[in-house]
Structures are given as C-alpha cells and as structure tokens.
Image (tube, rainbow, N blue to C red):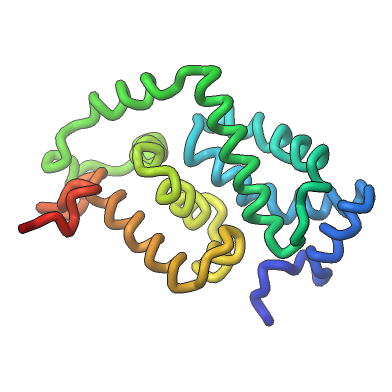
Length: 194
C-alpha cells in the first residue's frame, strides 16, 4: 500500500514496535517519531499547547513502561491514543482547566456576529476543545498533524467510512460553534426535530 501509515522512512513501523517490545530502545525512538504527532494532536485537543508539549514525553514514558501490555502491534496507534487521553485527563484535573475554557468560551461574541471576523488559532483551538472528546481529537489530527482520512482511521482503529463520517460531523459542529454557517444548528440538537 503506497500511503500505508505503518511505514516510516521506508521501514515497517510494526517491526520497530515488535523490537521495542523486546527492549530495543532505538526501535522505540522510531515508534516515538512515528506516533508523536498523533499523540500531540490528541493532547492539543484537550489541553493548552504548553501542557500538550510537556505531556508528549510523559505519554511515551508511560507507553515504554507498559509496552508489554500491547498485545497487537497493529493497534499501537489506538493504544497510544488511549494513554494520551488518560494523561490529558489527569493533567486537566490536576490543573482545573475546565473552568478556564468555559470562561473563555462564555466571552466569545455571539455566533451571528462572528461570520465576518477573522479566525485566529487561539479561537479555533478553544472552539475545538469545546467539542465532544472524539470530535476534538479527530479535528486536531486532521488540522494539526495533517493526517488524511485513511491515516486517521488507521490511527484510531476505525473503518475509513467511520473516520470520514466522524470528521464530517466534527466539521459541522466546529462550523456551528464558530458561527461560520448561517443558521447552523447547535451541536447535539441535529436530528431532534419532531
């Protein structure tokens, strides 16, 4: 497969994962380089950039300690994603960031006033973080890491159709949150008409 996300510099990442499970630190560094952007995107979807940057290393330290728990090398991306989510939740609780995000979103201009305003990165990140967990994560993978649908599907252990549909729903929610779609429905109310 030409765009197989399991390759890194022409070598099979699965081979490096197997070697890392056997204690090969050099192989683990290849695994790190391959999956660090995905892990960073997941963390960015939940935490401020400085916290996400700090936690990437912690996620891989935890992964290295628990590498024996990984029973299927093909699920390494999903396994690392779960570790990243847990680390993010721990950091989030520790720093009580939830109130800060809610406060920032509360001071956003109403969505109907925002259609003509330029969008800056902080506003976009706050809006993405305000989405449900899985949707924020998939948008960060798409926009921060630059992954395409098949690569996102592989990393999250989803089918290509599931990843594409989830990305489309996430984009609809983000547009509504940012007010870039006139008369957009509020996320969570779609399909509730009687």
